Amino acid sequence: MKYRTTIILCLPIVMSAGCTVDVDSETVNEKITQASQAVVVDDCPYSNHRISFEKEMIIRDVAVVEDQCRTTWDSSKCTANGFTSSSLGKWTFKNLISAIAGPKNPSEFVGRWLSMWENDQANINGFSPVSARPMIRANLIDPWITASSGVNCGAGRAGLNTPIHGSGACLLDLNVAPFRLLAIVPRLDLAGSESYGPADANSTGELRFVFGAVNLGLVGDSAKLNGALQALFILEYKLPNSRDLIDWAYDFNELSWFSTMGSKTQNSTYKNWLERLTERVVASGAMPGAPNGSAISQIRTNEIDFQSGTSKVWEFREHKLMDCAGTPSACFLKLASLAKTPDSSRNRSAALDTFLISNEQNILAESYEIPTAMQTLRSISGSGAAGTPTEAVHWNVSNATTSYDPLARHIFGFGTCNGCHYSETDTSSSRAHIKWRKIGQAAQLSTFLSIEPGVNPIEPDPNNSSAPLNAQSFSDPVSGDLRQYNESWRRACELRRILDEGGGTPYTRPSGAH
Image (cartoon, rainbow, N blue to C red; front, top):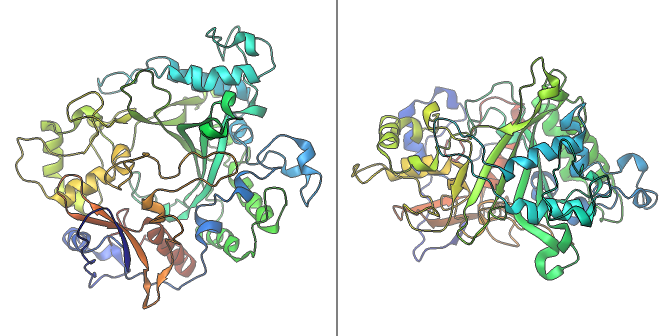
């Protein structure tokens, strides 16, 4: 294997021994032993199905994300070059959010949601409020008001704190919604996973649409990335379990067999097939009986550009449809608690010490949940010193605890929002695994997903097809121990398992150990 390294000394991966596919029979101690031996999956035992990283796993080619028909509402773009009018706007934010809104006016629905960033929101468990991020007005909302042509909209209404829902509102024009498609990401590997909570045996995985927010007033400025903001909106859908996991797997794997993806001005059979799959997930009524009939599971956001001032922190939020039972009129997107992420104020606290120490073995086995009393509605991390408002968060025990397993500390931090998007995956520079982009360019990926630019992260080692050729390697932010990952290879191994077996228990845990 080759390793991308950010430390002076790079040690070889210790090859795991005695691993079996039947992880149900493993004891916690066996899992701990294996977790300490390997995090790069170097013995994937499943058939080497053809899987294209770019066509099937993280789809970010401009042929797709700037498809002239599916990513716009200009009907003239759907009349030639193999496009048809039925594809108009299928991969736009408007199309997706309108289906999520159900019977409600989608502009009112979006306005109510975005307004949550303009005012403090009550937190849970007595933690500090989820503070307002007022620059969402100048960077996102006001330019959108200017570009909208409805009542109370237009340039004359920008800068006046014009409401975007309720009485006297500018109902934002979703045809020009300031969200640039970055990637379409099937996540069948999440079926049965404990990545975001207890394993769900009925899960068939997820499909994600990753958007980058845009300042519409800067779209023409290439030097400013055509208005791209450091603000990501990830729409995460459940794959409806009306179809079996194996059926979803073979349908998505079909994408790897098309010879070309086409271009943004030319349709292709690849894009027709991808649209067919995405519509089964995102269309109105895709999941009967779910809130608003939508298959949406949650919308996660990750941004720094909505905060005012110079001392900024990245903030992660999660939003779910709530208050839907019996009162559809109240079914709106609202803040939800973050999986496996305590409030940042609990870092290095006695309460966290107690939890980490008493659950050390479960953490090493990657089978744990944080106490309800630690849950929060936001996760933050900056670049400042420990104990400051802009602290760069490294999850750890307090000074009162002199010894704690460094691998357990790392795995716990790896499971949090502000750990996974920071030093536990060597994502310190951008806090994003799929990054904002300018027009005409594909979104860049973190080294956690891509190893390095130009590398196919799921290319097998020519001397051992069960192992990847490349891996990411970096130093643990607290202990200095070597950490190595190839997350995309881990996901590919799970896809091969599903194609071989049709489902069952995941072969790997989120860290790659098994």
